[in-house]
Image (cartoon, rainbow, N blue to C red; front, side, top):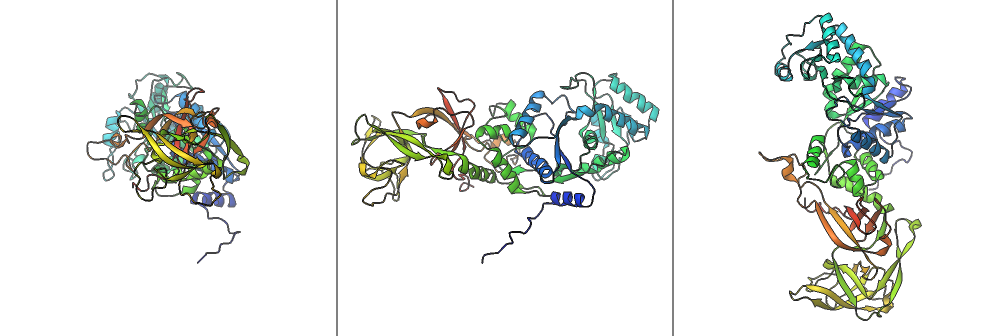
Length: 559
């Protein structure tokens, strides 16, 4: 039975939209301000894209703004290269931030607030090592032990903290901790570290600072400085929220509030920056923008469109529980988008020559082909056709099974946009390998239809041998064989789940001549083969194409 829906009915809201609408309705905030706060210690990946789309998308929907703030509080892992790549990725996805900030912009204010907490008796300098602090933190079942330095006087703590800033102590010699409760059921509230000593050059502040705030201390206060109304984080930060609120409450500053949503977990993919960095450093991939990587720059190089990623993020919604999203849903969003925008062309990846014996010698005719049946404005193009063509090797079988509708001895097929042809014989080398296929054509079937009305079930693609161009084609597949790459047997690592067939290179593909002047990231559908994009490595005399995805989900039957 068909269900009738009211076209005027308002779409359901996710829980974040409900919170924002209630806040605006009740006057909690006059407008909303969100932020995207990446740490510049690596390249963004598809998981970050979800957060970007959510933060920027919510602000746009409710007439607000979004800040870009780099959490640059750990100079040992951060680099300007990552800053630049993050900005490029956000803009490529189609978003623009209202303000560009850095946590380092607030280092002086954060320091002064730390002094204020010391003066209130809510922070102290600890001389314990990190190992000692871990040992004394306790467990979920057992309370932690107070530091022997926990009851230092306010004056001594102020003096030591000032000396920490002045550079009088080595890395790890002293730290600043909040004084909360070593028996708190939330482990993050057991006197968390606020500052540590790192005598390392910072990419923005140089050698000005040798003490750096921890994320849990800097994050909420940075939100407060910027008057962020809705600080949206992934679900693993829900246990950090009480500490976020504690600092804001004790400092009596603007009450930013944190909300958590389920992070994006994608099958056959790893999202850990540490593991992605390992893949790069140990040369399992060619770099952060390797087309098999889940990084935004890798997806861009592979041929993904920003629209497809935004549509994917929108389609999976906003949840409060973690789950694994099938990689096929990302490819589905991509196919939906590329089907509308990618022009169709013909390419042969495993060529074998097809010779039409009854076609006139030295004749070349021009056939008209439709660029994109989904886009009437895309127009048509010219395809040269002559006596010798290339077809896919697997489009011919000398001894075919039943219901094989492609080319075979005495069997007729349609050449796309061209003629009906019938195989008459084959040429073979000394080892018995087929080197060429001979056929005849029906001149009356031009355009792919016969005037006598006979039906041909098989249609195959081709390129003209005389005018085709050569290209390298990289056939990418999923980087990992298992749905959850980190799920391994004892003694193994996620690297044991790498797919050995994630990249195959075709060095002698034959393409129709309309592709001669393509540019990097131009996208096409190779008819019957999939969607392909021009790689950055492509040159005028050496074209390189990446397979973005197949026309159908080839993993469905395997799994």
